[in-house]
Image (cartoon, rainbow, N blue to C red; front, side, top):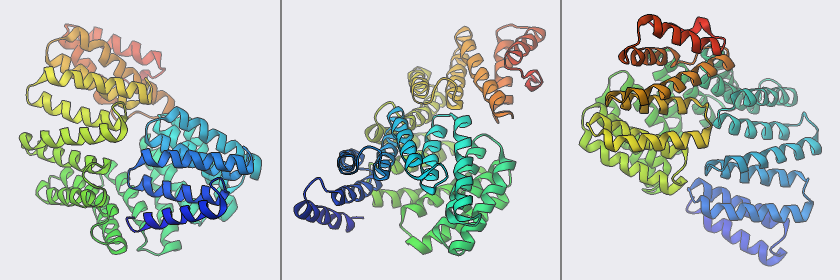
Length: 448
């Protein structure tokens, strides 16, 4: 990337000089430069370039041209990355309308716009809205290209990831296996796209407790990307992190630690020390250190990861909330609840603002804060938080049509709190049944 940037800037300067600063070719160069800047986490530099490209194409082609839709999609993806999701959504919807008008509702470019919008809706927990868009994109691409095309594999992979997120693992697995087979046929078994599908399939297998099946897939994905990109590429770091997490789950911490440290070194070398991917690696390493009771080593890594993400995304981004939550858990575990509580409250506020009141991450934040209040004997404060947490998961279960994976533990936690508050077994059962009845889920409640 270091070698590419001066070449793109030179091409941009040549076109500006020879064609003028408002020519459509200049917009193409601006988009190329912006893409490179985004890849190196220089989002603040990329945004004005994308906005300038959009203005040029609107002036050159009018506001309803497919080139404008392309620019809107590019800008929206940057806005999504910087947590300006409402602005991003309006641009994605405008791009979709343009492409549908220009090409008709069944064109592959419409499928791309549908996928982009669906991914944003998924990120904001509007899974019921996202799923039909993904299925429509899949149907378009199957009709346009046939059932064995790589774009179909991408659509299948996206849909499988959504099904995975909604705990429909039995539905997700055949889709990701089909995507993997398509890419192996299209590109060969050693292609980076194959590595991506292998990683997703491994996650599904881990979630269904088939760790023994998952591990060779992650190792194969790692080997593919090491062969394709070299040993020091960021894609390699992703696979190293995933493999390390699996090793931790199977209590092979000694094997996991050097992999996480290698991933961290790769990302620091690739992106510099202040990149969000570095923050992710630091967080993973800190979690391992915490799990092995090296809390003094873990805490400064968590604080560094938090500082990186606050600098990269701003103080109200969901990634920042994840870092805050990790640090708060460590503070609580080291008997510093007064330091942990304001962090947990900040996590809750960020998730509510970014993801909406009914997101499962909000439920997790409510539970963590309630458990802290419970541990400090503030039961009356904890009860409404834990009740809200349970209501979110009941709502998820009602909408999704299947239980949230944390629903039963939420029921147990709330039952335990009510018992601690002096409620009888009959009173606890009645309270749970009342909540379940509100969501039409009487059969979902088991307080035992």
